[in-house]
Structures are given as structure tokens and as C-alpha cells.
Image (cartoon, rainbow, N blue to C red):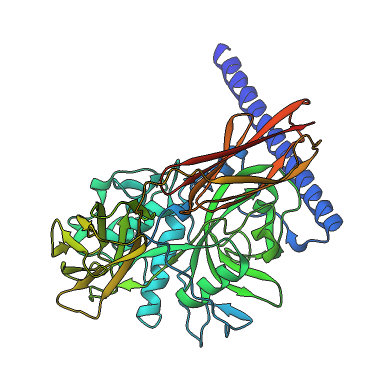
Length: 522
């Protein structure tokens, strides 16, 4: 009898669990259907051009949705560069077509199939890998390729983990180390460990020549797409995006979920939209792709707030380019006749990794009667690396007052066509300068009443030239400029009532300081 009761009790508990699960599922389905209807109503009210529906990710929990992202929100990609010390320019292409889709260029696709990052915040790894794959395909007339995202997630220096990562770090890793084929380290949607990759994978990788950033503007992103191929773009994702099925997406409703990295593969001026590859599998969007309105570049999604362009597939061929040369300090130096000025000259070897080290001969062009000598010359530098040396410049004791130009040049000894120059100025002061700059505050006027946004304008003049100006409000430094003019907008909305001091300091090349201050009232 007791066994019968036990069986009945177990059956009852099982039934209750099943009923509870069904009720919970029904509640979730109902909640998701209500949310979907709210999105559709918001789209209708805003006149949105896209269709919302249940997708492979729309019914996920908030935590699971966050795991479909992974971009570090506050990363500023503009601080990282190709392989030089200056931002490589994106060429402006006036003859670019009205539409471009790298999935079909002359009947050839240069984009690999859509992948699925799963429940791992590795969007950054999928975006950069997809960009690298496209560069290989462009170089090989569209031959298919499948590279291993898991290397970036699992190996030291690869750029991040399933908790998020950095497209810039990952891009540098692909440039310097490279990625093997997917078969070497199959994606697991976990952090995994680098030791699980195939043996000696570093000996057989695919690398890029380099990368750099495009400015956050529709035309710049379009030009990057046309000139370089598919580009990595970052964006802010809101809850409505998970329900995207088709059309041209623009934010309509929902709370912020996180930052995301994707691959832009084209654009359409007729639809005023970019064409983008996501990493959520083919069950989302238009078979894994979406279109996003140009207006979202400056809109809520901030599409392309950081955009990375790759400079081609590095097949081991040496690609040489001009070095980068800088002199520090770069500001005009003021000295008396016969005095010496010491500079630091830096040379960056911008050749790609397929090239051997280069030896750069250094030379200096100085005015007649002046002397120049380098601490070390020539400089032997590996590709992508830099080296510095001292430059001592001495003027003659008979030098007349005025401004003089000093020019240095670095030339590849084996390939003299690759050369770059840089110049600085030296000001000769025949008599010690003791005259302070004259500072004028043009607006607002002294004793005036201010409100809302106030335009602060000032200028300075000096007998030997202005080297720097500073703006202070109530003793707090607000602006520093190397110009002889200041124009700055002061928002006084949250400024306390009463008297406030505006002060402007100007410095000349001799170190003399001029100051002017006024009082304003709110």
C-alpha cells in the first residue's frame, strides 16, 4: 500500500512540475508577444521602414541578449592606428557607385557565410575575423575561407573573452600573429584555452597588412567600404533590434542592452542604408544580415561610432612605403645667437611584416653657418617599429634675429625613393625679450550679465609671437590652445548666480605671460 501511495505522490509531483513549466512557458510567450506588439506599434507611430517579428534571439532573457553582444562600450578606436604614428586617411572617392554590396561584385562574393557567436560575448572576434576573411577573398578572387574566431577568444593578446573584447586589439593580433583555419580551433562559444588549438598553428596563419580608423560620418564609412572592402563597425543595441526581421532598421523603442561589433558589407543610396552582416546565425534578420539607416550614424544606435578598415591580405609579399618622421619639440624654440637646441628625431618604419629591417640614412638641412649633428645615424628599424636619436642644432654667434627653418630627412638606404622630411623653426632673439603679450577679451564685456550659452572670445598679440593661450573660469582651467585666438562656448545654465571671473593668459615664445580678467554676473 505504501508503495502505491509513493507512486501516486511521485506522479502527482511530476504532473505539477509539467503544469508549472507549461504555465511559465505560456507566460513567457505571452510577455514576448506583448513586447513584439509594442515594438510594432512604436514602429507604426514612427513610420519605421523595417519589419519586427519573432526571431532566434528575440525571446531570450536580458542576460542572454547581452551575451550576444560583447563590444567594450567606451573603447575609442581612433586612438589606434595602422602601423604608423599618424591616422591613415580614407580616400574620398567621387566616382563611387550609388550602391555597393561585397556579396555580389561582378557576380563574385567576397563575404563569408553568416556565423553564430552563440551565448558568448564575442561579437568583436566575429566582426574582425569576417573582415580578415573578406580581405583574403578579395586577394584570391573570391576563394572561400573560414578562419578561427576561437583563437582570438582563447589566446593571450587576442583581444578579449566571452565577457567582451576589443576590435582594435584583435585587429593588431591578426596583423602581427594571424589566424589559422577554423578546423585548427573549432569555435565552442566558451573561453576555452589556447592550448587546445592545433599544434604549431602560428606557423600557418592568415594575416592582414594593417588597419586604421574611418571618421564617424556616412560618406567616410561609404568611402572606406568602396576603397578597402567590408569594414568593422560598432553600434549601440536596443531591445527592439533583437526582433528585426527585414527592412531598413532604425531605433523605435526599448531599453539599451549593450554595444555590438558587426561587419558592414555595402550600402544603398536609394534606400539610404548600410548593408551589414551580423553574427547571430541565419535565423535572425534577413538570413543573418540587416540594413540600417544612414541616419543611425548620428542617431540612437550611433552606427559606426568606431569603424575599422583593413589594408589588405598579407601574403608574405614585402610592401614598402615612406617612413614617418617627427621632431620633438615641434614648437618654435627661441634662443640667443650661438645657442644650441636639442631635438629628438623619431623614425617609424611603415613597411609591412613581409619586409626585412630597413636602414635609414639621416640628414639635416640648416641655414648657412649653422651646425647640426645626430647622436646616431643611420638607424636600422624593423617593420612596424620605431627608433629615435638626438639632433643637436647650433646657431652662429653672428646670427641675425628672425625665424629659421631646420629640416631633417630619413631615407631608406636600400630604396632611396622611400624618404620623408620634417621641419621645425628656431627663433633667434638678439636681445632678451621682456615684453609681455597683450590680451584682449572681446566678449562678453566686463560687468555684463550672462545667461544660457555664452561665446567667450579673446585674442593676444606679442612682439615675438604667441606660443600658448589659456582660458580660466573662476580659477578653473577650461581651454589650452597654441593659437593667438580663443573662441569657446560657455554653458551657464547650471552655473550659480552671482559674480564669476573670466581670465585669459597668453604666453610668448620667450616665456613672458600676459593676463586679462573680467567679471560677469548671472
